Amino acid sequence: PGCTVRGPVITEAIVLAAGETRRMGRPKMSLPFGSSTVIETVLGTLKRAGVARIVVVLGGNRQSLGATVERAGALAVMNPRPEEGMLSSIKCGLAHLSLRADAFLVVPGDHPAFTAETIARLERAAEASARSFFVPVCGGRRGHPLLVRSAARATILALSPETGLNSLLRANPADVGEAPVDDVGILVDLDTPEDYEEAAGRP
View 1: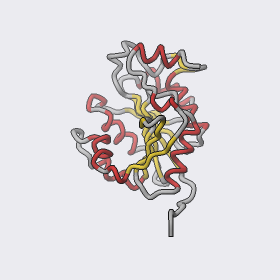
View 2: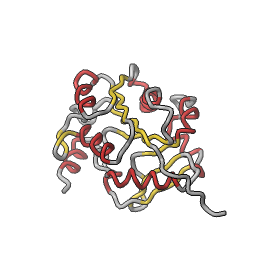
View 3: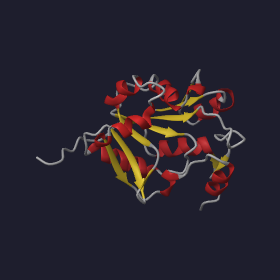
View 4: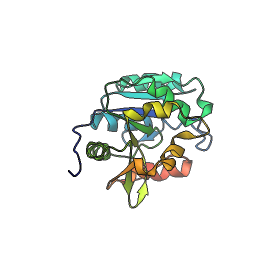
């Protein structure tokens, strides 16, 4: 009776870093952030959270970022068609995850401000629920990253580019769990130069 505790969740991650940087005007992933760069900050946070395997999906920036990603202990893979959008990168990353993990994180590479504790909160939410998707929530607003139970992998691989992952979540609200966090970093998105200057100047 009651809520079934499902046990510790083994988590892997797909970091989406293949997108173009038209609105930023310069490559986002290599911009300075904290004591390193945007991509190194993201990878460092995932490492501190104990994520078992990290796959970084790159596009035209493969040559410039590949070595940085590998030095950080992650796997750099190439999306041959990054122009097809985020879902194509997620599918590309899924092909390189292991089959042992209980869940995987979908982490936009231009969201570098979330904390390792947020990952732990998402994992604890998944331990206590049979839902397939888990999002962090701060101040009533949903943010990133997203935790997905591995059982949903086949459903995601079958999605059409026109549908997308966000549409899947909207169509299945009862299968989406929320993890309340005290982490405004889940809402930080480096989309424009103004976004970057504000985020980089945060304490």
